[in-house]
Each structure stands twice: as structure tokens, then as C-alpha cells.
Amino acid sequence: MEEYFLTEEQKDLRALIKDFMVGEVKPHIQEVDESGEFPVEIYKKAFDLGFHTLHFPEEYGGGGLDFSTMGVLLEEMGYTESGFALTMLAIGTPIECVMHAGSPEQKKRVDQLIQNGGFAALCLTEPSCGSDSAALRSTYVEEGEEYVINGAKTFVTNAQESEFFVVLATKDKSLRSKGISAFMVEKGTPGLIVGKHENKMGLRWSNTCDVVLEDCRVPKSALIGEEGKGLRTALGALDPGRLYNAAISTGICQAALDEAVAYAKVRTSFGKPIIEHQMIQAKLADMAMRTEASRQLVRLGMAKLDAGLPATKEASMAKAYCSDSAVYVATEAVQVLGGYGFSKEYPVEKLMRDSKIFQIFEGTNEIQRMVIARELAKA
Image (cartoon, rainbow, N blue to C red; front, side, top):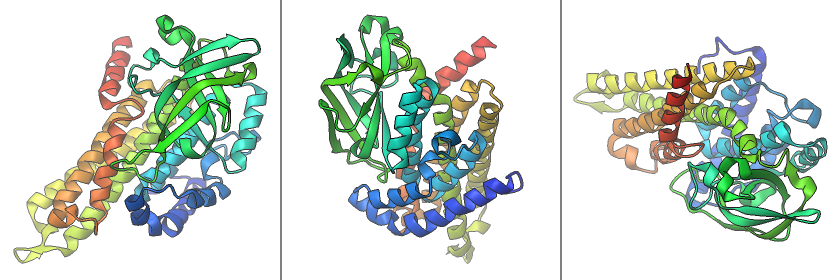
């Protein structure tokens, strides 16, 4: 990444992130990728440095960083290990929900849970409900001074280790989005059951589980914001979340490009390094253009958020373009390395596996294109 547009604070923080990623994460990348075991102790070291609360308000013990700086840092994390970056991001999303709509008591409680090195998770996606969030089937009813929640959630990031969950449920499915509320459910609450860790194709540094709620009783104080506005609360975190994912995707692009260029300089064919062959040059040029365009889309979206401006269109554009680019650049890197690109001895095959999910979560790229078109129709 070019540093000419970074502030001195951003450069210093980026250097801190890079040192940690190279020193603490990189030596274990292949081991964790192969075993699929969640490296909790490495994450705890990151928590000690405050990596999980970088965007958390300073008044609650966080770093208070702006969106533009978060974009720079998440790209740096994603450059070395996208699963690590996604874990940090996934902690921030439920925190954003509480910070946006929660009570002062809920915010203080989150501070207590998170500052002690706790994970957090958002429970939104369901086995039969992905892109159409308003169609979720998890329900809640009011009984005295409690709410009773029943339902099943899937693909919940950080579920196995989370200290608290933001759970979305409806009191009336026919109301769709207007019937959905959000609840803060702490680890150990009776009826909250976390399933097994998913054995995923890629992003194996990220913990992903099903979560089941069976007559899960929470006090009325667990309601986040107002009844019927839970989906709005969750979706309010989507624009930053999509841009965060786009930043990580850009990190994947840069990593794949750097690996391809380095290999092309030393691999010879027909008597010269393959980087001197026009076909390879064309591939590398396209990869470089996609990488830099991705970075600039992230910068635009983050700048609009920092300015307090609507960024729904820009967030969806960045999310779709950057994740598509990550898949493209990683796949082309495998092609540049040829047979070696298909070998686990080189990192590009992992980059290709890791990149794919970024086209799917935080709203599939098909949904992003619908959002972009809808925003264009408003103009």
C-alpha cells in the first residue's frame, strides 16, 4: 500500500498491526489452516493490544478510531491472514449494534465483557433465511418480566468463544422487518446452545458455529433499543461492515499480487523470467489495477462515513467489487504460479480459498448489485 495519503498516526498503527501479524500470526498460518482449530491464545494476545476494540468509543475503553483508519488497518490484517481480520471485524459488529441502540447499562456491560478479552457474535442468519433477513423464523414472546426466545441461527462467527450475542428474533412473522427485535444474550444463559465449529473450505482462522435457542429466557433489560426495530439496528451496522469486508478483500488482492510478482521475477521460461512475457505482464497489470481500484473504493466509502454522509451505495459497490477482485486476483495468482500455485507449499492456493466467502457474507454480491441499483433509482 502506498503511504503518501496516510497520517502519521495511521502509519504508526499500521506498523503495529504489521509487526503483530508477522510475528504472532504468520508463523502459525499453515498449522491453523490445516487443523481448523481456533487459535484462542493468539487472539488473546491481540486483545491485550486492543485490536478488537479499535473502533470502540474511547469513553468505553476503545481506540475511538475513525472509519478511514479502520480501513487501513483491516487491509493490513487481511494481507497476512484474512480469517484473523474477519474475527476482529465480527467482534465489532455486535458492539456497533449495542453502541447504536443500546441503553447506557448495556454499553457498560459490553465494556466489562469485551475489555476482559471477550469475543462477541451477531446471530442473524438462519438455515432457511440468508439474504432475506426480514423472513427470519426465530421467535420471542413476552412472559412477565422476561422474553423467551426460540429459534436456530447458522454461520455465527465467534460463537464458540463469545461472551455475549446480539440475537434477532420476531414476535410476529407476518410483520416481517417490523416485528423483529434485537436482544443482548450473555454466554451461559440457559437455553443458549452453541453447536460445533464448521469445517470450512477457507477462512479457517475464523470460528463459525450454529446457535440454537430453546426457551432461552432473558430479562426485559436485554432488549436492545425498541421492539420492532431490531433489524434496523443490525442493518445499521451493515454499511461499515461491508466496507470493512472490502478492506480485508483488498488485503487479499495485494497479498496475491505480491506473491505473483515475486514468483514471476524468479521463474524462468523460454530463457527469461516469466515477468518479461507479455501474457504474464497483462495478467499482473490487470491484477494491479483491480487491487488499486479496490483500495480507492474503500477509501471513498470510509471518507463518506467519517463525514457523516450516507454511504449505502458506496459500501455495496466496494463490497461487491473488492470481493470479486479478491477472487479474481487470487485465482490469477494461482495461474501465474502454474502447478506450484496449486500446491500448499505456496500461499496463493489458500488466498484463493479464503477469498471466495467474501462474495457471499455481509450480503451476497447479487444482493449488493440490487442495493446499488435501488440507490441509483433514488437519484
